[in-house]
Amino acid sequence: MSDASKGSVTLTLDGTNRSSSAPLVQASVGPAVADIRKLYADLGIFTFDPGFGMTAACESKITYIDGDQGILLYRGYPIEQLAENSDFTEVSYLLLNGELPNKKQLAQFTQDVTMHTMVHEQIRRFFDGFRRDAHPMAILCGVVGALSAFYHDALDINDPRQREISAFRLIAKVPTIAAMAYKYSVGQPFVYPRNDLNYAENFLYMLNAVPAEDYKVNPILARAMDRILVLHADHEQNASTSTVRLAGSTGANPYACIAAGIAALWGPAHGGANEAVLKMLEEIGSPENIPAFIEKVKDKNSHVKLMGFGHRVYKNFDPRAKIMKETCHEVLAELGIKDEPLLDMAMEMERIALEDEYFVSRKLYPNVDFYSGIILKAMGIPTSMFTVLFAVARTVGWVSQWKEMIEDPAQRIGRPRQVYTGATNRDYTPVEKR
Ligand code: CMC
Image (cartoon, rainbow, N blue to C red):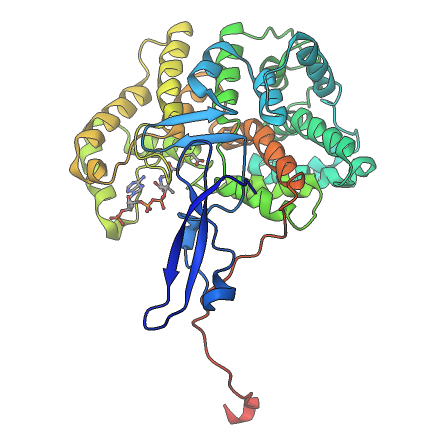
């Protein structure tokens, strides 16, 4: 734990003279945290924070978000600068290692990752067990979890070199498995990776190529895909990353941990939102139906959410959404798509929502998922693959956070407390007496 403690917060139990002093641990940027680890010993109480909205569960040097200002930094670098000037492979190195690579380091890292892009040939057989109409997230989750059965030569999490090899394997193989899940669903042959292509190009190639003809990766689409990957690469302690850390805290192997992260990402409140946004826009159908839809969203009894809006941390524009919106316009222009009804509807929806008291007072803004689906659709990526793509990008974030956790001397098994409100101790009654 950082030793930069300055000041403390004192909690006093009302009506007693018992108190507990929680030292303040300073962050390098952002709010300090009160270290409450002595609270139970001092006062016999725990804290209650459903959804962990106020609780820091770890110390991390990877990603910083200022939700009020709409700032996102990877290792200190603003997301806007990385999206503009860097690429996914360089960003992956940065997230994993803490610094931008020099030329030699980048070349070595690229080589280390690309040499692992193929999956064990037996893995192909796994796919036959899935129905053709299986959601690709279901396949991804299962097959990534199964990787530990294939790569057990490097599963010792206490060995830094083995951790590194597992990191390379995960970053390299998840796109291959993701593309295989897609090919399986459309009944086309699996396409082997091509190591002469960069990460985004190779992913597009594995998704779109068929053995029957030549496939040239469109550089504009590859650049857009790369940018989407960069924007999704990490986002500090979100639900799926916290899931990866919690699973990893037990000593579980990295493939099992990343599979757990994929499962958590799938939900519509998290990574599943990009798919849900597109479905929502398609269901609304045309701009004149937007006001009625917004009314439904505002009605708490309807349980309908405006998908792609709102965020636990951002109470201002999600900086990723801004870049995504620009990229969306660029991609449509490059593809010569002059009129995209879904984009028009999304922009109209955004305009109406941002002027509506319900959304304004709750500080609900478009998040990263609001525009990403429209770009992906324009790029020819099927809707069911949107969340899969998010998982491909986030794998490096999960792996970086997992690695940081294992290397943290303060790391211990994650084990939240509860407020038990169930029955108190009572005696068992035999069934004939009930
Ligand atoms: N539509 C309508 N109302 C909303 C929405 C929304 N999208 N988001 C939040 N609210 C309301 C919520 O009902 C609550 O109202 P009230 O105070 O009257 O009870 C208020 O705003 C505060 O929201 P909250 O539920 O306390 O916020 P949260 O931090 O628990 O949830 C969220 C954050 C992202 C799960 C939520 O905003 C949401 O479900 N959004 C839609 C799904 C979505 O787009 N998810 C992607 C998030 S970004 C990418 C990622 O993380 O993967």
